[in-house]
Image 1 (cartoon, rainbow, N blue to C red):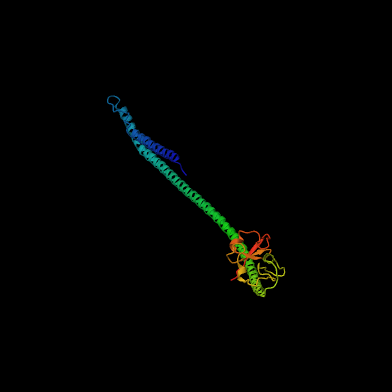
Image 2: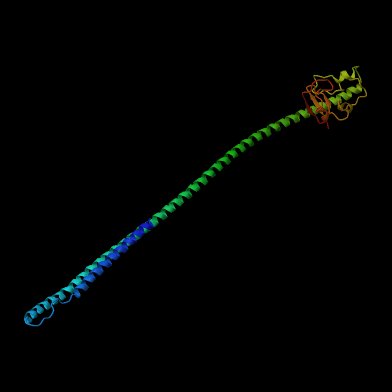
Length: 282
């Protein structure tokens, strides 16, 4: 691109060239005017030297007429030279201006191209940055999706395991209920028969290893003729609520749900409780 100082210097050079051309033209014009304004150096004389003066005058007139004949040709020659020089300089000036115009146009085009290239480069960098950020976000989302899928798989496995465990516990509870009902029926029938002389405490602490469930107060050798099956299903701790907790490992059904959390020893056999299972009698 052309700088303003350089253009100013070039314009000053052009002005100087024009001034020089004008001065040359003025000098040539002054020379022509000076030749035309030269007076006749031979004055007219009278007297004895009349014939000589006449001859001299005639020769002067002849030379003057010759000079006047030569002067227009010089003027025409100078005018042609000046015109040629002016045309040449005008042509050079036009070519110089045209060249400067082309260079200026080329500089403007180059500047536009550079600006456009810089703009496109910045846009490309911005788009690349955005694409990289989106790629990172997509990778994070895929990673989270994989983690969630793995977690869902684990939860499904755990749910299946809990389902199987619930089915197993349900079968155990059903078996306990069946055994409990059988034991209650057997105890009531044996209580009505009334045989054996065992004490209440001995019978209460009896554990039959052949039975899956032991009910305190309802042993096989019970001697309580007036004992009813439902009377033996009250909590041995609070004596008020219905028994619902089967103690482990002695398998005594002797506590309600509220007392089970407060007592660590079986109230029937005084064995340390390791666990308990809730039984629904109704």
